[in-house]
Length: 56
Image 1 (tube, rainbow, N blue to C red):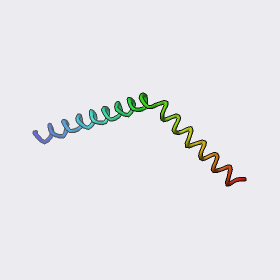
Image 2 (spheres, rainbow, N blue to C red):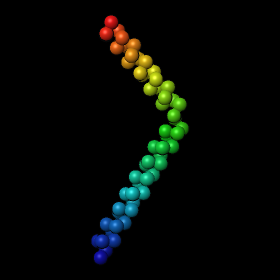
Image 3 (cartoon, helix red, strand yellow):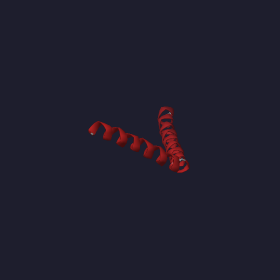
Image 4 (cartoon, one colour):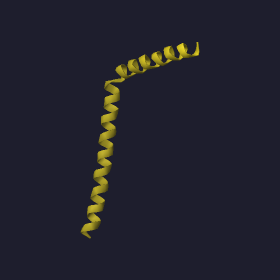
């Protein structure tokens, strides 16, 4: 009986951990949204510039 209780308890902890990790990721996306967009834009511009040099 104790074994069954331990298994159920671990599942609940795992779900809480996943929810907390997702909440932290969402908070980071909200906080760094503008910086992430600027970084992606710079990287994309660099890729386009490099590709145009290769293509001609």
